[in-house]
Amino acid sequence: MAGWEQWMPELGLVAPAAPQPLVHLCLNRAARTFLRTTRAWQEWLEPVEVTGEAFREYTFELPQGGELVRLERATMGGRPLEVAHARDLPADPWRHARQGVAYLVSSDLTSFTVGACAGGPVQVYVSLMPTIRGSTVPDLVASKYHEAIREGAKAELLNTSGTDYYSPDQAAVSLAFFLRAMDEATSDVWRSHTGRVPRGRALWL
Image (cartoon, rainbow, N blue to C red; front, side, top):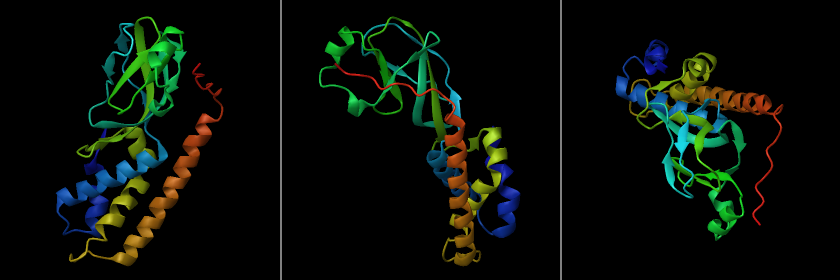
């Protein structure tokens, strides 16, 4: 994992008087915004052993400093498992569970339940971002999107009024770069998914 120190030399040049906690805060916000928007940090979480008890709650095994943005797909025992949205569930999910409709659902992105299945290891592929106190991103993200995160942090840093590094014009330039980089990264992530066979939607009977 790459820490915020990786960006400090460059940001120190544009705002040498900025306190380190403020710079780290700007980096955290830039990284959270970038990764929430682009979903460029994706990985498989550690498997969770599911007992088969209907609607029992399980906790996602998240990487340290990571927060869930979106559930992309899931498997159970290595076989695809439908990811359902809580808003799409029927009023009586127990009836549908008895009819054998298997799915995984999370209403808060911290825990999940699995309906209508036997026990086994469940593994979820997710999009992540740093927590509000997070201080790292994966090395690949830091390397590939270094400039984007730097410019996002710079845009906020240079827009801090009442400081000797306040520079709204330069902040606007950095913000434009940041927004363009997010658009490009979002397109890259979308294209990387186009070759996959789409999963069918669950049909609630």
